[in-house]
Length: 194
Image 1 (tube, rainbow, N blue to C red):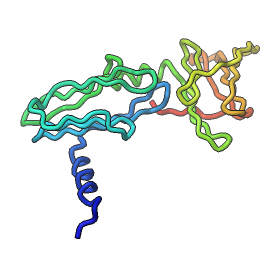
Image 2: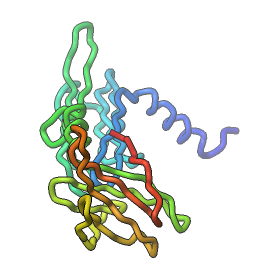
Image 3: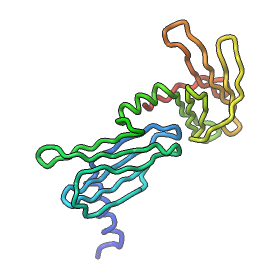
């Protein structure tokens, strides 16, 4: 006799066989994963964001076309494109805010700095938006106290009860302004997720 959940386990593993695309999208509130399943015989489409199914379409006759959805707290507009290729194949691409994911990621890496920190037994992701000087802790905008120093500026804020400081200093080299995060006085290496 088969256990009750055996058919559920089989259907989940069968669904994963239709997984055709997987992307990681860096946003201000973290890196989001996008998974797309496409049943080329049935036309079935399943889209998951961060492991949560956001839509399912079964038995579609049109195998190509676009799917629009929004991602993260900033509600970045995403467009998943399914295009035909020769020999009954398909190409899958993701546009974020109107740009191919690669271009969007490149732009993000120029516009923000991010760090991953564990303190007080909790994980924090700090994102500093260079143009607006906004600081986000786990996707939430935080207030920071700004002070001028002889080499640049310091922006102080709290992560729980832990003091964190982002220092912006001008360098003599071609780098321009360098942003560094200090937690409890110790420099934290930047999280290169882009």
